[in-house]
Amino acid sequence: MKRKTDFRLRCLGLLLVAALMAPSLGQAQEKREGSYSELQQRLVKELNLTPEKAKEFQAVSGKYEQSRAELIGKIEKNDSELEKALAAPQPDEGKINELVAAAISGQDQLFATFKAQRQEEMALLTPVQRGKFLMALRKWHQEEREKYEKTEKK
Image (cartoon, rainbow, N blue to C red; front, side):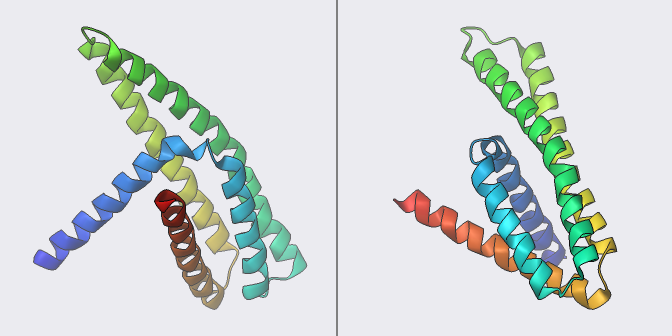
């Protein structure tokens, strides 16, 4: 039972970290897009994808970039409105409830794009490639987290 609770708490913690990072996505979007593009190039090589599969694989990413850009814009606008509503001398609780619900919905939609993208990418791969793909993603996330931590310390 304790292991199940620990796992749930870790998952919740990861979701909260991701949710808190979502508003900052638009601020460094170009940097990340370049970084993710580099990851995709590495994956094409590591997974030994044929040129046709590589093209399909990269098309999946392009498909989601536009929808994410729109979602991030909506999230940033909503965050700005929420910040203003909270700064009011007497915050309107009804308005704040609406803005909080919109923020949660936007974050859920953003996370759904990552899940959908991963599912589409995985569908293009063999079982061995899927395993390598997941390990490469894990390694990339670790590298990105380390880069972020280094910049935060400066």
